[in-house]
Image 1 (cartoon, rainbow, N blue to C red):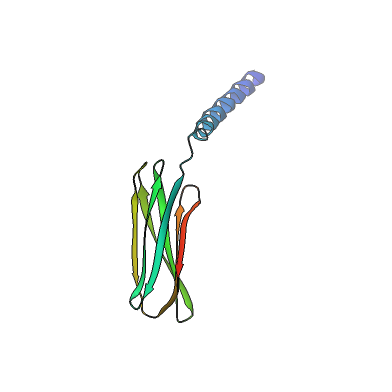
Image 2: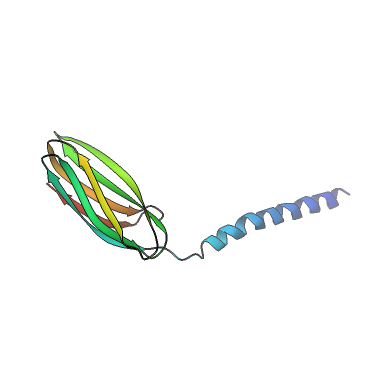
Length: 122
């Protein structure tokens, strides 16, 4: 009787693990989304402006980060940008700040961490 209970418990565990592992194995078969693009970063007396475009071959979330140096201190501002398949996504960010000595902008695909574009100005 104890062996029957143990076998039933073992079978239940195997079935539960199969149900958990199967969806994650299917998820790895999905195509990888890739993105490409370019940005330009400019520094003016009133702040930092980043412009550009990006295109992805699938649905993706992009993260644009502007990092600037003011009076020797570095700070960053980020925004998330949704991207639809094969649609050009405009990149436009303005950060108001006086006395910026240098700035860089990076555009990254959130899902993969892949760098899409980087630009700097001083």
